[in-house]
Image (cartoon, rainbow, N blue to C red):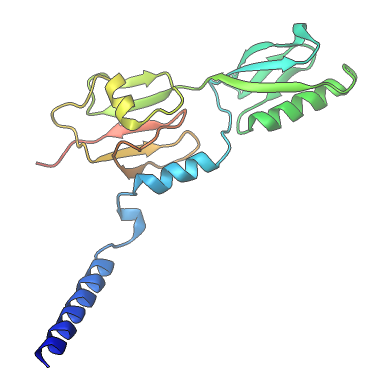
Length: 196
C-alpha cells in the first residue's frame, strides 16, 4: 500500500511541476526565441536579393551581355540592351526568368540566363562588441563569428541573448545565443548589456 501511495504522490508532483512550467512560459513575444527553429526556417526559404548584393549574370553565347552587376540603391541592376531590371525581393531564379523574358522581347531568340550571388550584402553589428559597424557577409556565418569579426564581446556584454533585425523586417527579435545562431545577409545584430 505504501508503494502505491508513494508512486501516486510522485506522479502528482510530476504533473504539478509540468503544469507550473507550462504556466510560466508566458506569451511568445516576451520571450527569448530558441535559435534552432529560426535556423531551420531560414534555410528552408529561398534567399531574396537586396541592395548591396553583387551578382554574376551569364547570358549563354552572349559574353557582351554577361558580367558582374551590383544591386543598387534603387533595388535594380543595370544590364546592356534592356537597362534597369528590378531585383530586390526576388530569388535568383525569378531574376533569371525576368531577364530572359526582357531579352526575348526583340533582342534574342530563346535566351538562356543564369544568375548567382557572388558577394552578399553586408551585415551590421551594434552594442557591446569591440568594433561595432558594417561587415562583409560570408556563407555559414554565425553570430559568434560576427562578434569575433567585430573585436569580440566587451566585458559588459550579455553573452546569452542577441537581438536580430532582418533586412526585410521592422522589429528585432531576441534570440538565444549559441553556436548555431546564424546570420543572414543584411541582418542587424545588437549585443545588449548584461544585467548585474
